Image 1 (cartoon, rainbow, N blue to C red):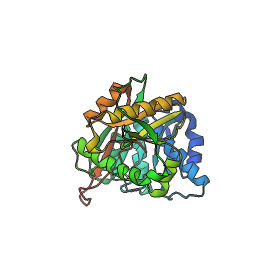
Image 2 (cartoon, one colour; image 1 turned 45 degrees about the horizontal axis):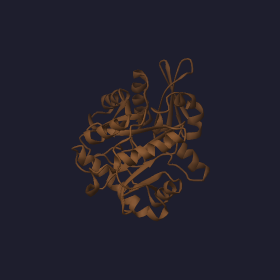
Image 3 (cartoon, helix red, strand yellow; image 1 turned 180 degrees about the vertical axis):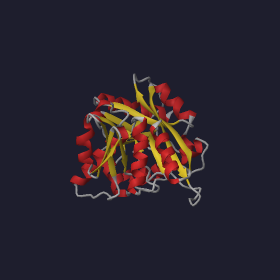
Image 4 (cartoon, rainbow, N blue to C red; image 1 turned 90 degrees about the vertical axis):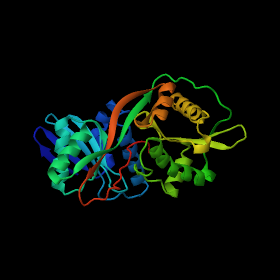
Length: 318
């Protein structure tokens, strides 16, 4: 743990996700939908630590406090793939700028920033002022929460839980998920890089029973929907994937509706991310009863020496 004092603020960098949750838990639980990405990943790392699974030394979790000691912001840097963007939750403008200065002083190379607006804009702008370069928007995302579920027109078939025997197909569809989403949003395939979980991680998700197929009347698997375990009473959907040949038939709407119903029946709130450049998915979720909560962005910092193919994580579903 290290603490960086700033005028009117204290930035506390934690290497231990458990320490972070202990310090910021009340703040995170006050708005658990907005904090869903951070709390889900923090709790996952706490669980992995208890199992003896180490995390890289470069990972950190940030608690931002004001002069009174009240927590006013949080962030993390845990993306396991280049360029490892920090992820920022909403925070005061001066905190976002202070974070950029702290990262500069820590000597951390930051080539992308993800998270809530306007914090990511301010942080990225200050990083380019300090280190050079220019900011490009890779993706605008929007976090939604389900209010009252509106059922879509029914389709044949039903929802089944994916099992260990489905690991190959689930992995294949998870790998296709982001590339297809890029194409549907008018970006080059692969522009929004993400890491496909390895076999061990995929098996963990399957054993948790949080991945479902929609199967048609013949028993064919035609769609995949996943969800994270609830964190602070909120579960986040993702991935939501239908193979190209099966699209336009209502599989996704019905699968998401049924998974959402089950999560709410468990007593949890349910949320999901959409890509603002994908009108199809936004329309589907709005029709089901999902309503916008907060806008986010994935930003790339481009410098002369960098490849134009620099990628960022979408900050969305885990």
